[in-house]
Image (cartoon, rainbow, N blue to C red; front, side, top):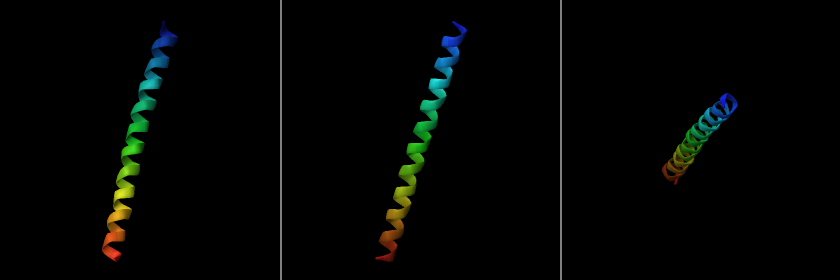
Length: 40
């Protein structure tokens, strides 16, 4: 039971980390697009 709880906690942390990473990537892409618009 303890191993299952630990596994679940690790999976939840990984999912939350991935969500933040994807959000950060989206913000980076938006930043690059805005910079490109300013140059043009």
